[in-house]
Length: 171
Length: 90
Image 1 (cartoon, one colour):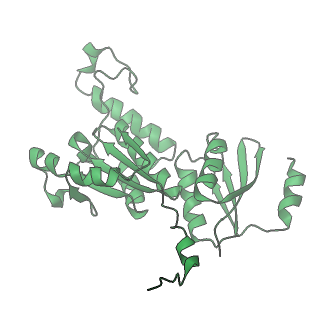
Image 2 (cartoon, each protein chain N blue to C red):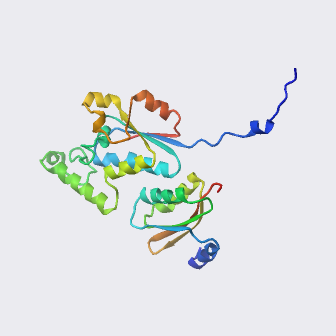
Image 3 (tube, rainbow over the protein chains, first blue to last red):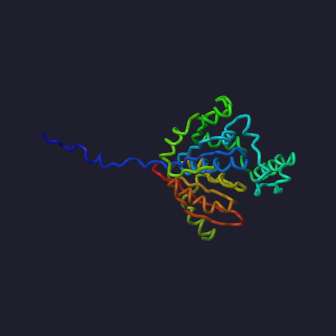
């Protein structure tokens, strides 16, 4: 029996180029730390990449409908914060609210989106939003507490996504 | 490149759209430019105006990553004007 190559040309056709991918972990729930993963993910999709963010521990507040508008900037142990106070004054009532207000003004005066607006931007542009299932269990967060489109998943699901990533960053 | 050279070089192919991102910081100029480029056809040109100094590094990087072409950059009076062409096959 003779084997005949019927279509050698098609075998030479290479696979289409795989899109680049970034996999981010957002682990912090302060206003200042909510922005970097959202900025990186929105930029990545603008470059034509795939992007996913795994929101875990305090970072899950960024996906929490009752909390994402109320993220704060710490006035204590934050020497680079908007209001630079010695730690002994950082505990004064109102110091966190004041630091938060200053940062909100910075963002608003620079035409930067709010966190909820940013979340809409990244979701609308196809960023995959992983909500850490363990955090939800530990902190008593329900599925209906989270923004639309959140994908409740554990570490294995995120690592499965991150295994094919070109860039991975922990924030 | 002078403004005159720039105008001459780009007069042949008119821009399909102009996007003014004055006053916007990273990631918004790149994000908004990508939204426009995504709906243009390959070969279409976009005139992008920015004031963020970081855009001088970001817009060429965006074009390289997306496979679009950056034809020219002109800096004038605190702003940058980029002429981009959408890549790919139409």
